[in-house]
Image (cartoon, rainbow, N blue to C red):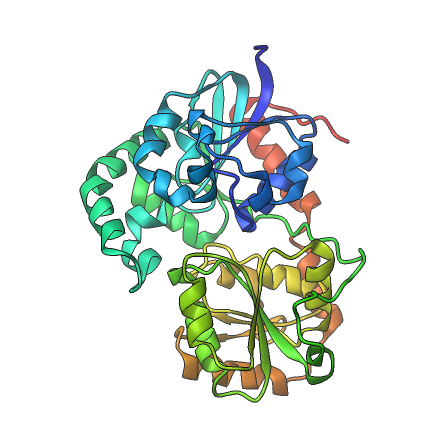
Length: 374
């Protein structure tokens, strides 16, 4: 196989989330560049990846692992370590595994976070994690941390998505990194469709919006608990292992949706009152997407949200991911008068143009790579 000037690497393409949106942005900035990953399930991630050359490891032969990538944990380190990417430069999008791919050229890592399940287990797993998961991580954790740190040191340069991730990289690996915020890539001007499963009453009654994978550290249960105290509707968009528990515990004014199209998401962003986010987030992309529609955010004063929200201008904070604190902040946001144009202007500072301008500088400096402009 011919050596490539550039290859993009990513952990796995088996879900829809902020990291996957960043990879899609990279494919637009570097057209024709292939993606190397471990597992790829086209039906479970963004359909745009069907237009890109995606290479996977031998693990991808298992449909079960493609649909349930967390069960691949015991095998991923070995699979990644056996895979060599033949390229002048490998641009790695990683929050777990992809920085471990062997490379024949320079390796630049765009880090969404060092593996949460290795370095922040209590936050990541939450109280509902199966004992088998905890036992497996207890058994493999020390070995995987050693493996993870060795792979991190093979990179020629590290880039962090936010200031908090910059500190996590320093703590986990002893590596200094540059911060480049991920781009906001959501097209606000496309068609809009109300999700078919959304109640018609949403249009008249108004609603707040939570867009999140349903994982323990996202604290979606605290948000739904807050709305048991509020006379307002909430729409939650997302999937994940916490789904059944969250649906069972949610009050009647909460609606759960999943696997929506861009047109449906545009409708939700356009019609919502505010976006609500309570996660221990490494960056916080949904407040930027909401801001592009002129909508404020109500978010946890932590981590990446400190980089993406201007308090009092584009949103309000709460200090603990607890229902009472969230309900109080939501009520405050509803009472404020927001400057929607100022919120939209803030979103423009997270454009793809700004992102690629900074990324080009790093690639030229650390890898001697010049991007072909399109």
